[in-house]
Image (tube, rainbow, N blue to C red; front, side, top):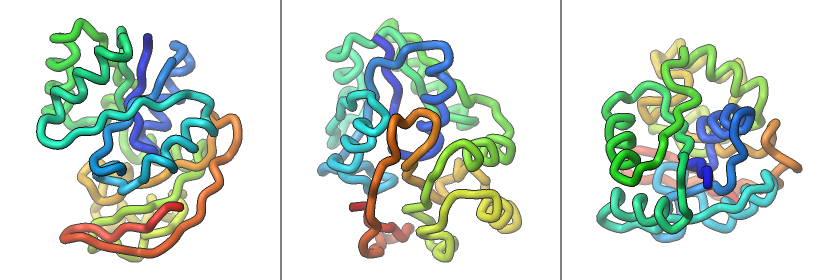
Length: 202
């Protein structure tokens, strides 16, 4: 069984796209808390419809305190032999993933690892239709924008990572080469927490 970690955003979409050229991914895995993803604030119902549009089922890991144990349980219960991750360059996070996977005798696959983030961002923008749905507060003006070349240039000018690897922003992917049909969504209210502004996805 080959799984792919899924956030609903651009990096997991590109990682799935690349991995799918070599492997048949059997299931997506999405970690949620209180019925939504932590970083993107995407509801389970939206993620399920995203999986339907792609044509791959989604398994949810619902965590509270111990993320690692929940992740292990999800991998075990789905018979994972390989798992695809969308990490690009955060070494400490990759080391943690590889430790967890080694304990389970699961192979971790990193299709995006070591990529130049500007080149990767431009490739994603060309191949996928993605919308920015979460931003750190200093990037408020980018909320709701299509992730495209003009936005990438703006991010670089403002000394931000063009893939948002430092948590500058998050996206939802609604179409691209992994989709059997576009995901139809509507955008609702804007809301915020201490660090981020979010755009509700309906």
